[in-house]
Image (cartoon, rainbow, N blue to C red; front, top):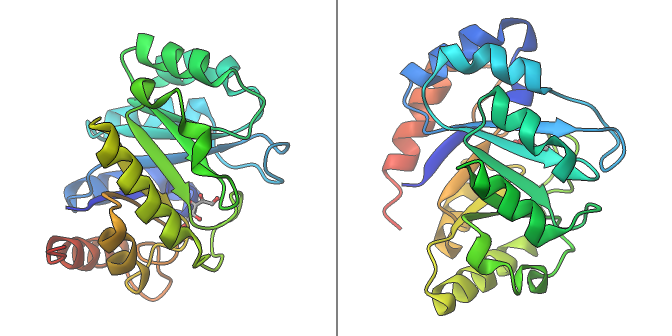
Length: 223
Ligand SMILES: O=C(CO)[C@H](O)[C@H](O)COP(=O)(O)O
């Protein structure tokens, strides 16, 4: 604890399969794929064919974060490509309950992602169709941004909401998850980290070493 999920949009995209193998061997817990459509967020990143071609490199869970409008249109394509978990944004043009149900019907874990300014009330009435919540700690779309401090209170409020519900829902955090912010977010209740340029894909360190030091750091978190 907590679980480490490399944000693969931050990897060297020209050597992606090699990076996945190194990280798999290095003991990460799952892989995080950011999917962008240039509309919900002003950027593009990865696609289902990339995910499919990497499926042979690891048997660990592939977590797909759909930063797209009308995400329900893409559930089947990512499920067929080999996703194990899919999160959709509460703010995207989506019938939230129906989309979560569709993800679960494919026997995948279903998640809701929340932008920093989006309140937790968006989770009301869909908590029973939810396996994880991705709390964005930066505005989605770009790696290398600053952590937004107000999201810490949101993680704490979410943890209280989940505990009160008695449901088994994990809290994932995404955006500037670094050696400085990990103790803060874990202390508030996060159990799944999305690790990008702030903790894993570091210019000064090779990936093997970076994965080993991040894993040791997370294993030592006793919170
Ligand atoms: O969701 C993301 C961008 O929208 C990325 O996963 C995340 O930001 C990458 O991590 P870092 O902030 O450490 O570069």
